[in-house]
Image (cartoon, rainbow, N blue to C red; front, side):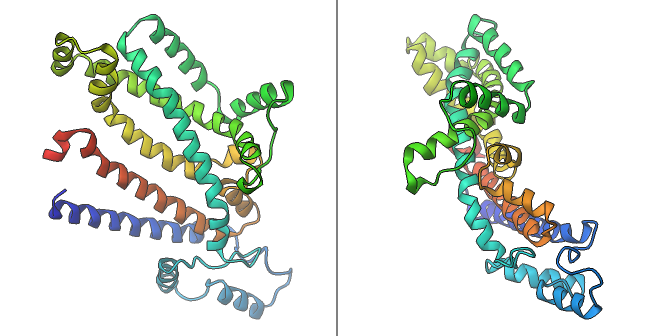
Length: 315
């Protein structure tokens, strides 16, 4: 990227982050109900309400409170949980590694399955492998993630007793127990993501294999495997990279059902607990962190486009 293009891109990124912060802050204002209702006893005096509002930064004009909250957030201070009285930043940092590990492993497993299957299905459209892949993808898409998780638990944990049903074992307590507790939740998330990757990569491979440079490679006698995984896969992964960034951002903030199903101490279960207890400041902090992470991941994906396609770098 030239300096001018990079400056424009960074300016757009900052603008998006500012809009994210405004939307996140307004979440508390638009939420129905009284955020102090769960903290104060019945018949609380106005003095008690004023003291509680001042303690959690809920007093003062809206614009003033936004800039105070933004200034604190830029310094890593997202306030204190209204229920536990602990810093919101500490609560998020304590749960974030679990969600990041779950999302990262799910993406890696999905890619490990999707790349060879998508390439093989796209190599011979309408062939046996393509038809089998289409049927399996359609079946997997028809099963909601929570139901797929329940089915995996029934088969591998209840019937075969090969894996733990629920629970989380920290890594310091042993690599084997740690990974065994992640197999079912990762498989649940990876199955849905892999289907999207396979279908996208398959369609792009079909189009890429008709390009002149692929036909020229075949005419020169280059082995089929090299053509598929070296010459054709790279330009075909352009759309896959876009979806990959969206999927990673979505998984970071969208593992609520899976984390609750398998009792994993991640951001998903934390935000669910915060919503049930009406801990709005904690919800607000989690939403901000997830939204910023989503924006930054997609920014990295945008900057990776020139590495896949020289035409983007030239333009």
